[in-house]
Length: 137
Image 1: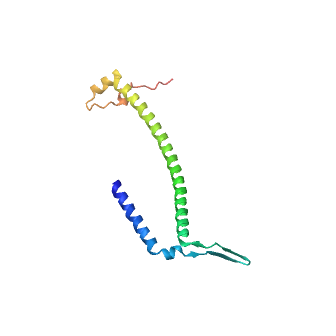
Image 2: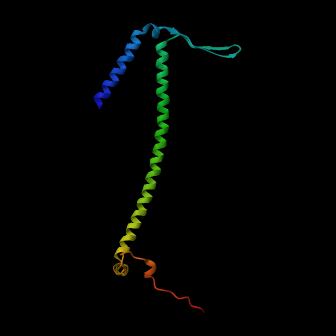
């Protein structure tokens, strides 16, 4: 897979290089950019720069913006992972408590005897409780 990816990128870079080489007259041409917000007495002009520099600047700005967004996503996901790990730890504690209760429940001799006496093998705690009578005083 690495070699295929490498070959893919070599082809892309070769095509990009061919595009720039065949159109080098356009890319070497210098142009100025004007910014006019229609405010009297204010007009901003960028000094003449080659067109390829504009492409490079826009590409680098895109990389920077993508990197900044990536950092925000990274920290958001890091926070989610932290919260999920807390939830997992809490649920693991609950599982351990329930396993302990189940171990005690299975090894209680009175409950074990009741389970063996029932037809379906299911222990019903309500049947095992002694009947209480309400005393009227």
